[in-house]
Length: 423
Image 1 (tube, rainbow, N blue to C red):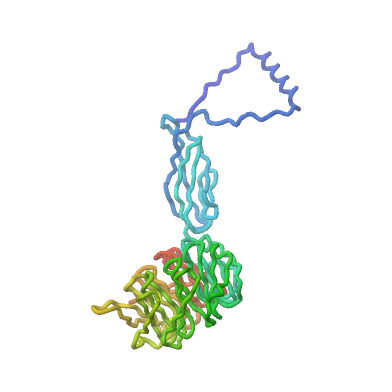
Image 2 (cartoon, helix red, strand yellow):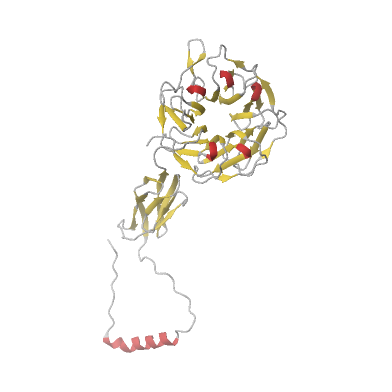
């Protein structure tokens, strides 16, 4: 119910008063006066209620919200409240509650009137499938990692790009090296690590804005991957069976070499004790004591180069490599053993990640040198080819959930999905 106000018409006898008032107004027209207080509602607001309480829109899409403003008698006043987005990089809103998606993420929509307010949640998602993001670089990218909406990609010539909005925008970091970087890992949104050729180990404590090269790593081999289980405990692998480990957040490093001349390309741990590393010629190494000692799986299950390993649980581990090989672990009555599976002999798989023990993703390139993305939902028994929307080779992939992930590759390529790669 709208409030109405009675207006008393002036009597005829008040004409002289009106004339005098008019003359006074003319006399003071050139004088400076302070504006009067803004006219506000003549009723007291008891509550504001937004509808709907939550909605999802696509980038560039719109959604209409409404809000009822109630007085102290719990009657709607018909007043249009003020509208506000808590993050205009995610969505904007008009003065009449129409929301437009800008970038991926979730933010609050606020409607307020008379000192009262209500909020609704707005989630903005990109379209289906995989789509390209602008990395701001043409350097080949070899590694990617995300913590929530914050992400980092590393590559040739000391390239590091970072994002704080799920890749809507990427920014080049300040890096004290021109050596190519192969792997990246963050233990929190602020503290992270990157490794590369010539024994390069970098550390950042400001979210990847700036980096410092560690001088206490006494190895000059190419380093290919890095994994941290906690802020203090981490491992780096590289050429000639090299494993570096730290238990004090990089203040000191210990060296171990597997009995192999092969390059170790990837390392993954579940917890702080149990880990796998894989590399050239199909080598697979394991540890059960934080990397203090390692063993090699014998006999080798494949001679193909293995490029990536992912360990989502203590028992489940998965690898991918050349000629489509996609080995996995299986539990037997006596132990955990590796078995060979294949995702397609015409595919060269460079990166892989399993966000769950059954759902995983692999990236690389196919026989026509087109960037490949594969998905499995049965722990690697079968694979679904997805449209990557890039012709460049993909080198690494990382998912923060079963549906939200990024892949990186040659010529600065970054592709992203928020729907598990599906339309």
